[in-house]
Length: 136
Image 1 (cartoon, rainbow, N blue to C red):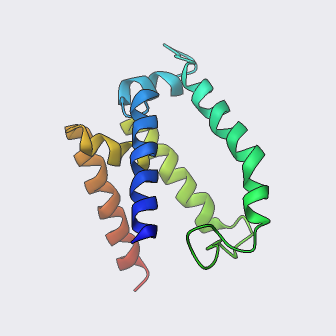
Image 2: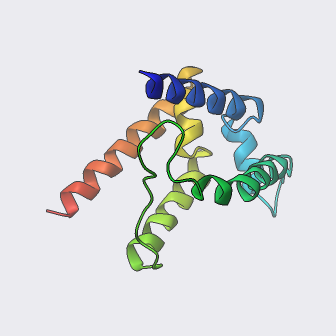
């Protein structure tokens, strides 16, 4: 129960941060990505803040024997940059550039009742299904 509560509080905090930074506003994100047109650099501060926190705490946390609220860290064992990673990254970037949403803000957008977020989440799950079918 403790783990679920920590996850819930973390998710709410993350969602509030996305809303406050306007990452749930596709127009804001698309203007940030449009560096040759109507560029809005304000989301750079969100990214710099995230990088600052990560660079300070990531290694310190991973140096622990285990997380505070679980038995072990769950990290990918893959270290190579391979074709599936590059293709997946390209698809992610294209989807983000077309819609103005990446998965986190899309989920937060669901809570705000954004129709575009519903379409994005539907598309993400459609991609999951397509991937699963392609692996058969």
